[in-house]
Structures are given as structure tokens and as C-alpha cells.
Amino acid sequence: MEDYKAKYKSKKYNPRIEKDCDLNMDGQIDKIIIFEPSEITNNKLTKESPVCVFIKKEKGYDIFENKNIIYTSFFNSMAEGLQDLVVKDNYFTFEENNQAGDIKGNDYITFKYDLKSNKILLHKYSFELVSFDGENDKNFTYDNTVFGKIFFKDFDIDAIKGKINNLKNEVR
Image (cartoon, rainbow, N blue to C red):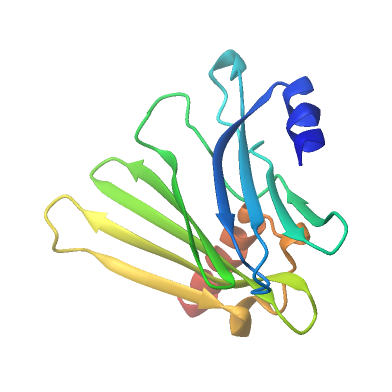
């Protein structure tokens, strides 16, 4: 695990959130680390925020990595981007805030450690739109019936949002 911290530090990333958990429910401590860029150059919005999941094994760890899940920060707003990582049993959820004008958005990306296959899969993607006046609030939840089976390492939030937009356009 320390090797990964050093690896990402050499690539100019710092740990943002570290959570101890037991995703495979074997009584041993697993860990999730979210890294964020130590510098955001030229005021660019960056999704380059690697997430590493370490599942403790008898010797060492099974390691899962992905850098296409979340935005840890937005150059123009400290309130936007990753807010929290919540872990419960073999599920973990990234909570992210976004804002566009008078509408605030909260995204929730939940993964599940599958105890049979020992893989991490997308469980669901939810977002809520909260309007300034509260009259146009909406909640949306999508799961594997919409996306199929998506492994943690293959997840890309931009592809997910693109698929959702295509679904909305098909309904119209």
C-alpha cells in the first residue's frame, strides 16, 4: 500500500481520503484510497483522481485501480467535486456535488464487492437535482438493468453520463 502512495506521490498526487473497511467481509482490514492531483494547472477541470481499493489477502493485497470515477476538485469551486466516501458492508459510495446555475446536483456512485467472484462491480449510479426553490427537485437511479455488468476497473463516469443522456433522448 505504501508503494502505491509513493507511486502516486511521484506522479504529483496526494491522498485525499483513506478509509479502512472490510469489503470482502473476512474480518481483515481492507482499504480504499482516493488520490487527487497536487496541482491543477491552467484552471482545468480534472477527473484524474485515481482510486485504489486494497483487499487484504493471506499474503499481500488484491489491488483494484481506476482513475475515471470521480472529480475530486473543480478549479472554480471548492464546494464542488468529491464530498465523501461512504462504506457499508461490501458496498462503497462516492458522493459528489455539482452545480449549474440555480440547480445543485448530487451524484452517488455505488460499487459492490461481489463475494462470489471477488470482483468489484457497479451497483448503481444515482443523482439528484435540487432546485433553488425546491419545486423542481428530481431523483434518478440507474443500475445494472440499464448498464449491464460494469467492473470497477472499466468504469468511466463520462461514459455512464453519456449512456444516460442517450436514454433520455430515446424517451423523448
